[in-house]
Image 1 (spheres, chains in turn brown, blue, yellow, cyan):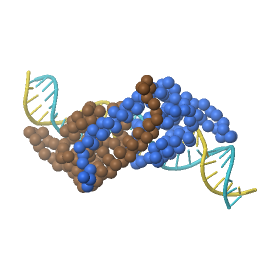
Image 2 (image 1 turned 180 degrees about the vertical axis):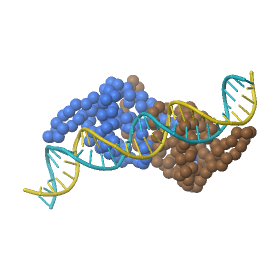
Image 3 (image 1 turned 120 degrees about the vertical axis):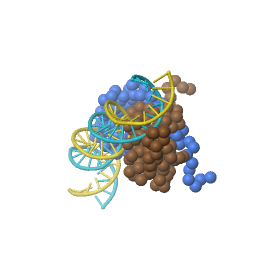
Length: 112
Length: 112
DNA sequence: AATCTACACTATGCAAACCTAGGTGTCAAG
DNA sequence: CTTGACACCTAGGTTTGCATAGTGTAGATT
């Protein structure tokens, strides 16, 4: 993944990953990498601030836990967050569909 | 279209629209709006600087013409630009596919 | 004649937010 | 006791889309 293609779509990804159960940052990063087949291998400096932002916006709640001496901050979706996930998802569908429409009719090189 | 979802994907759109023939800025804006079914109604302040950037990068060439007293700057793809279009397109496919994979398994609310 | 709308381009500067690059600390394995 | 996986944090830079404002022509409307 190159450039800042992610811009504006990160929240969708984070909310989506967290939507099926409470998770902490490190696990979110791994799961995002796995579920995207290595396309989204996000640096911590990208994910942690985004989680803070989402919590500040009321989309996530968090609580500290300690597992085997390691402290974890575990996030879960709020109702507002669940609503936002749906909105983001609809917006993504419209967006990606629109790109598809623009791309339609652009021929591939060397492909019959 | 909301936020900065476009970030990182604008070049793809511009290159795609220009790929089927030389066009000038105003027409590019209209065509983008039409082909995207109003999803991409981009302000001039977004498109013109982007065109300049693409030309500076060697992806577009331009020439001035005068049609009915109005000067137009007409852009066409360079070879480099055509290559970049292919690259951007592949990247877009990988990106959107990856988002799809992450979203897979996230249930819609109230939909059987 | 005057105004309005569509056409067509330019320049400046802001702000969101992703990323780089650092930092802290725990635990298990070698 | 060193390495690597785990787990978190933040300050600052950079990119880039967008807002805003300005210039000017042509044709239609009033």
